[in-house]
Length: 312
Image 1 (cartoon, helix red, strand yellow):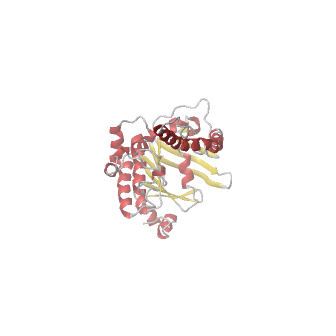
Image 2: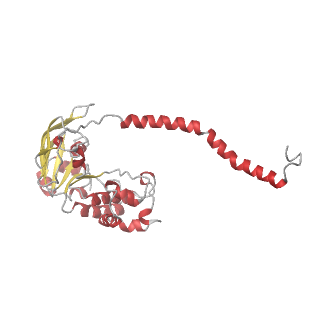
């Protein structure tokens, strides 16, 4: 109307149209805020529901700080059952000495992962005790325990963040020099430098921009950085190709050097890294010894190897 009435110049008219064009998408976005708010509110409600859920494992009021492992770990008469079934571990007694690398071997459902989960106290035994240098884990502060236990899972979880931040997840205050030293120990430094931004490269959700072997080596770099007193390794090479497996195994050998470790093993090549093999069967300790000793014995372990439940 102003333009028709000659009260607005052509320049002002064009400026007005340009302003409308710029503002229109913003008004559309503003209109969608209600839907975004409702979706976010529903998601937050679910998140807070999980966060408010009481922890299954409770710490005693007078729990003590756990010192670094000096002698070893011991399970005495341990029994454990999940709510949905019968006993997974049955009167299990075993000892893992400091500096010893122990492989847990057995058919599916034998209790290998459950036994490993008892060490960082993800579960408490129904009966019996898990002792750290003779101290029952139920009597110590959970944080002081878990800071001493490193876990390298088979399915590595990486955050949508930089490589450096993912390595330093357990020690976010670690200086760059220590992060790089951990990466070198895990045979990861070279492939990291080959990334577009090196250590500042963002790996994507769950590390989607990296290969399986690269993700495993970053998980090992995390373990190198926190320097745990005890390491739990859930078979890290079972789903890798031959080239990646070789690089991960070399990193694994460095990580296990002079360290107490429990390996949930599925491959014979990983089992042979252990100083002692524990064979679980139906929740009980069926056999223990070296690879050669157990093969000569001709029991459950030899059957697992011959049936390729433990693969070469």
